[in-house]
Length: 183
Image (cartoon, rainbow, N blue to C red; front, top):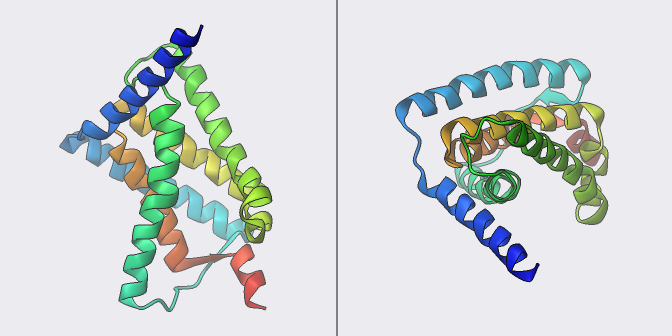
């Protein structure tokens, strides 16, 4: 039993490493861009119409934007994609019922970690991370990044997609959570 667990852990780390060593081709980056644009259209429409988001550019200086971009690349983009795609999902490009189950589990855990994160580590994000619209958009994000990993075999499109979404949101929009902190 112990050997089986060790083998499973080794397989997951090898799969994750392979996902970072696999560099996407031009068509896969194009797929990433198209999916990102479609996600952006849906997410902005849902976020703005629900009141979750409000367009309001930040007043960050260039150096602050660069530091924010780096921080958001490390967490949540690299951290969460490593865990929820790289370590959790089996080797990409497997089109089977079992892969669909793993994709569903990955997205479900990705969504559920946000309220748990707010409860345990970031209580100031409680309202945002438990908002049904936010959780719906997190599910869409999880589906999109899982699909990118599945179709490309590379984690880089998923990381880039995740990073771009959170960076644009953080620098161009405020959530009801951010507005509450201003008053």
